[in-house]
Picture 1 (cartoon, one colour):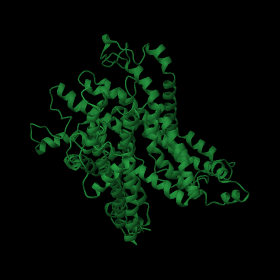
Picture 2: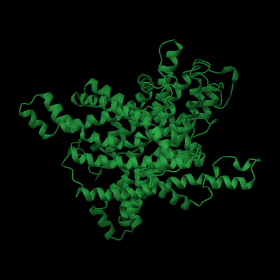
Picture 3: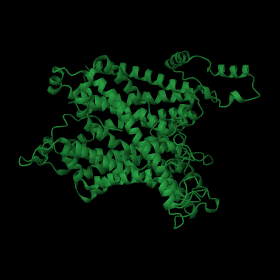
Picture 4: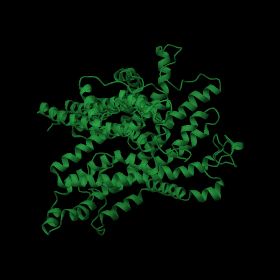
Length: 308
Length: 323
């Protein structure tokens, strides 16, 4: 999900970036934000994700006002409708409106994705920080465990856990996060190892700051840029994983619509309607594409040295 | 130095493999109640019968006992028997392995053959229209769900072509039973799934080769080679490409586990009788001896792939020292 940690001392602006002497000194955060704002394509992609998230939040309203049907409303007189005025994106084998189902499916896909990112980041950051900060046997034990988690082919782990937990949105997020936190932990540990060597940590310790204070107040802010980059690059991949699990029947179960499980059935009706296959996939594709483009923009803005 | 490095890596690997088997078994073990769903509700079975059936499958033994005998057998090369059909797990794996290798091997070869030239073109014409198009294709390749791409290909090349009475491509299986699986038949079945898999590799690797090539071409020795009056072609291919390809070895090494698990979704979509599909189906049936066997096998591949990639890297780039 997340690349290797080659980032150190992020708060030093990269060489060659327009830090002319005439310009007033800017904080790292201000500069990064300016760089991100200057990236038109990246901002447009980010805006699209925000719009999708709003649509997902307002799904009940869309059902009432725009499409006039609920995602589970069955209408056997209207099966396999082609896209048109009556049903903008057509209907499926039970006459359910595809557009309505896609809008409600966005709640699942985006909700699970954001939840997964939040879970992997919090667990991964905690583990990585503790391992990197304390070092020694604590580091060894924690990192060997991370090695194990990352060595099991992820898809097997997902399958086993999905069978075990009969997933709803929250457990599904936990299942996907149970693998994702490993790479975050590695990333954070690497950062902490380099940051804790620096003088300001020694200085803070010498005036009597405890472990907890050092970690939360001084190490965490320095790790934050890496976390922001990891989070924004992770969303797209997680949407793909979640959709694949739904498709395999291991994720969100029908009749709750999700982008992935809408495709499970579509396979049986190839000869009746190709649209049933096309639309959910296109929706996933656009969302993941926008997330990836936005993620890359964030990475370029917050860490100019990683730019290829 | 190298021997010591390998020994240390090997020891760490053993610990990781043992840990992985414990984690997998703990997960499988928690589902043991569900094995043979509904067995407790079957009125034709007396409680003694149920107990006997469970004992036959070894389900009555505590977790650690099961694990110890399992790992002992594995160390002697015996992966046990499937809980569904009683045949040796190893024979299942060996049955499916050639199909999986056929599919992923083809995809990797196609991926390399196409991504290397694309990456080189992108690097040599950096900033040109061609480069931009290649970038867009690769970014799109990252965002396409593999299973959906598979479905779309089936929709276009199997369903729609068939509906119009045109020659169409088979969408399921590794060969047709009636054709007896001759070479042409197998190749026809391979086209669609291999396209989906190689498209993914292609979009990852072509980006990678492009940036690796750009980095190499900015090195001093490239300037030296040009200063000597060497032809541009020789500079690019003999000095540039050869060095730019080194990191690709690592990537392909890391793909080794993908040989087994990477194609799982594609195997399911195309009904390809491979290892991934085997693991998927057997996990749904709670056949945990088979799942343990496949997971163990796949984990070995992950670790072997990592180690192999690191070692090959050192062979190809003598500047790298192991410590």
